Length: 134
Image (tube, rainbow, N blue to C red; front, side, top):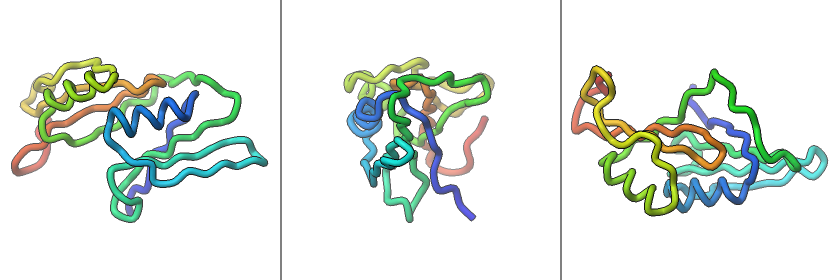
């Protein structure tokens, strides 16, 4: 078994695609409209779906916002350098909500950004060797 994708409901598909491609550097892998049930799916990611997990952006026609709830945490992405990633994201119009720095009580360098719908994205700085330390 493997993780295929994570689905996020979005209020403006074009805005979300622009964020994940222009700001976060992903590619649109596929997109399709369902006329009968009035929704559009767009799959975005860093590599082909056969090679790794991707995000499914679901736009239900006519719905512009969602209550994110209190159970959702975040999506985590590995980056080479968290501070440089924050700067690049900020310069591309992204919202950095926690600057790069060590996780509380640990050594792993993390940062947080937020997508246009308010979903949190954790940036975890890649370590040379070994598992992530918390």
